[in-house]
Length: 216
Image 1 (tube, rainbow, N blue to C red):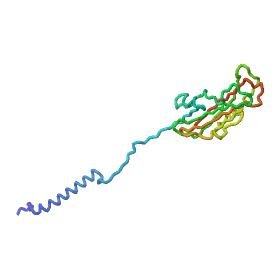
Image 2 (image 1 turned 60 degrees about the vertical axis):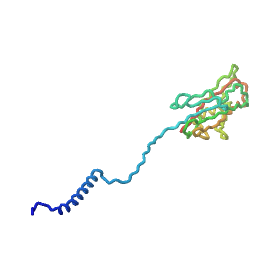
Image 3 (image 1 turned 90 degrees about the vertical axis):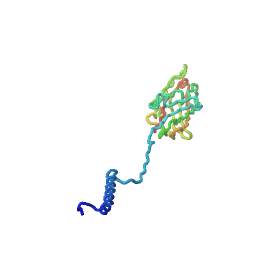
Image 4 (image 1 turned 45 degrees about the vertical axis):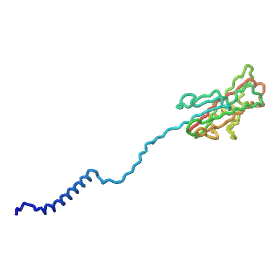
């Protein structure tokens, strides 16, 4: 018998061993390429992640809502500060007599989209006296003879003379409520010429500027 010849029986027995070795090698190769066997997976993608700023815009209206002033009237919302000379808080009467009271109702509203956290009123630093018409008295302290009461609902914001109102300019008056977005706060200004005012107070006027402020 040829010693180099392999019998058919031995070839049959060697074939399964070679096949098994080939499969094992293929598995090892697969693992070396993928790193792991496949398994379960889950994921969530958040596609809408954003944040934005709101607005706080002040609106002032007279009682009949026929006059409206906005804080954006002075420019864009980037400025958000304006001068409103069309709503006279003291009524603008030029015919007051001693003991006479003039009431003026207004509404301050937050027309923005964000709530205001504080709401203040700051009077100007001085009360200015001027002549009213062609016949004028000689008194020089009409600001001390004009009384002012500011109320918001049942809350009294200020009560005193126009002179003392202007004298309080160093500190702002905090309003009873800061309006949320779309919220309004009503106010009434009652100005009275003191009943003790004599002829020397005729034909005189007094004025004090004021500033409303929202902060958020």
